[in-house]
Length: 371
Image (cartoon, rainbow, N blue to C red; front, side, top):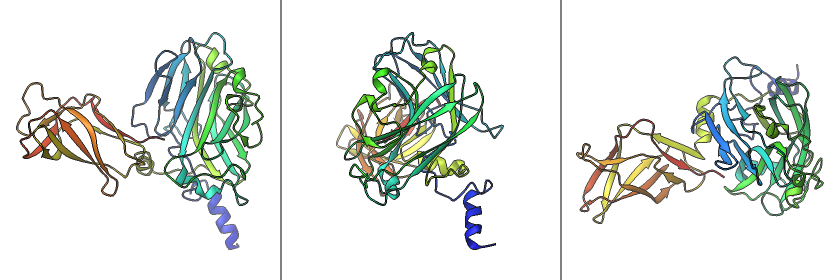
């Protein structure tokens, strides 16, 4: 057997999952869900949210009735214990207005797609593959959207043929040689988007089948031909094993370890659960303490910090009433994988302190640096 055949077998091996690192998407198997396994969404409430890590679902325009849940579920086309992401419509939209749109997406960091070489003669085609299951049949659109330099977009469609049945879909997007390319930085590089519904104002712009300069909303979901996921109470749409790879052929899904997927996800979001977690701190002036909090990995950018009920107490002051000082960003040290947090509202007297948390286990301290 030739060495070329050996390499070809490795790339296509279901056991090996293909060549390591081929999947541009993170958490394509929908396994990591740091924020929880279910999110409620509504036209008059949460309209943009993450479910499993790195994947978000968004409602745009003036939805008047639509609500539902976006959840990680144990339902998979190949594994009895595999995961997928599932949208379930609660209250349906009575009619789908022209400005309305509804989609599921992952935003990809620009540094992670430099090998696509967009904007030049060496640009690469890519193939998106995934399993999808829906109670609604019809024609759905997927797009790639490039927000850097000249905005560029391409849509392609796939058909769901059988209701409530897992189907594997493969979509190849040609290389984009125009538009100035993707900046080599930590910003938004490329969107991978699955459309669930799109009003008449979101289709017909000419982006279906070929790259073009983004001309506005009419290009966003060009080719989407059904809105029944949003207009049918109880409708479901779910997806798993999402893979975006270089080339014109889909290879078997790249199975990464849970630990590997988790650390990739923690570049964009991580949290510390409450409990007896100790952090070393130092006094700053007479009313602040600086606490160094280690991170699991270097984050994409300076994270936003949210207490979410997380309470700090000074060592030796555990039982004191009303010990709930405020927390604010103070510094960020990417080299040491740590965030320095200023905790205000304490009389520190400029002496060393130790702060730790004794709040209920349902409360968390979160760090977010999403795209």
